[in-house]
Length: 375
Ligand code: AMP
Image: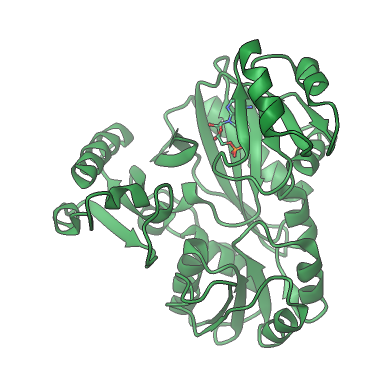
């Protein structure tokens, strides 16, 4: 067990690292952040911020030496630096978990090997025959780059044969995964934590609504049948056990129109769709991450109130600084800003949550507050 007073290191200094640092510091841990870009959101609340590239193994090792445990909040850290850290201190979750999740080919193959339900797919290696791959899966399908994809980056829907030439041009020569297009009823996610003792805890299943491929609303409880919630929880638990997770992981799922639940994506870190846990759950996903990687028992995941989370993107700055006074005037709103200096379209700048007596009521309030903010 790593008790409070010890030092937790995190690779990546974005909002996930910032909220992790806030939870860690509340528990009395020291927090060090490793992030290539200076003055990062996590650095502002951490005890120490190191700015160096992920390829700088000497800097990484020096960073790791000062930490009792290191975790990551950024998925695209290459495997070699993670292995270098593991030689110096504990790295959790294990680098192999990240290696599987950060590449769509490996991730899909892993799901298939574990016999977990997922969209049918084909892989095309660099320079391979993409047209043949699309024929194998059939149209409609979604073509995704194998590496470095998130929030819909690096993917294209091929809805009819007429979309095929654009896909061939866009992905020429690149390794890709082609997935069957799922005409889903809704998307849900389950954030799961697993301790080093093998204890597993799944946060209440969350319904997610995306806009332009980026999460817009998270709704809890998810408005799905109890059997769907149970299936999602079971899958998340299964994934955590099969990858031998120690830490927190977001499991993104599709719910089909017949109520089948398919795994879309794995993220071995805290997840955007779990931010509501700070305001409406007995334990937040960030505290749970601290607990899991430091060997404390996992906290209870009781839902305290129906809640909706709304992401605030850089687009909200199009007419200058958003009207925070108006948003915070609503007593049922909890605002979280990440301290990012530059508001770019699509960039996650913050989020707010709204609690109410029902999820429907929270959603309708959240929609009106979002409209006020953007108006
Ligand atoms: P991803 O980056 O793979 O999580 O994809 C981002 C979003 O694109 C998902 O949340 C879905 O809304 C959509 N999407 C991804 N894959 C598929 C698919 N196979 N069928 C339908 N929609 C998809």
